[in-house]
Amino acid sequence: MDPIIRLSEQRDLQGLVDLNNTVWNDKNAPASLHWESPEEYAGYNPPGSQLVCVLGDALCGYVSLKQPLKTPSNAHVVELVIAVNDRFRGLGIGRRLLDFAYEWGKANGKKKLSLRVMSTNEPAVSFYTKCGFGVQGKLVGEFFINGQYVDDILMYRMIE
Image (cartoon, rainbow, N blue to C red):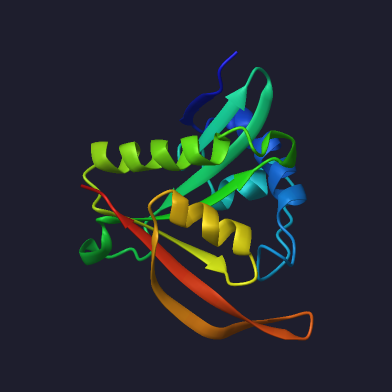
């Protein structure tokens, strides 16, 4: 059975809450992310605002699709947040999600994908680079986590 990637729906909300509550930690996010309910999650990530990857009944991962600034001059940019369930890592799910986000952006007239990643998350930086993203900047010492200053790396990929 092949994974299916599609826009998120109401029925995905509990799975997205569960995934978010397990995947984010102080090694890959500047603050703990914990959602109390699907309704709370939907307030920030309504159905249709994310691409989800499902395999059978399992939600394997997602990528959020957001406009960073709500101004017309920034409407060509899509900011991504990606998460893959640990059980499904190493199966190409993350790459499929990023490729699908690229195609979604292209089909919707977008010109740039952007994302942020903590400098301590070296596997993610390497993964994004392999997926065609480049570094566009760095916010030095942006976070103070576990007694250490951590840079926030800004990455991008142009849509052609």
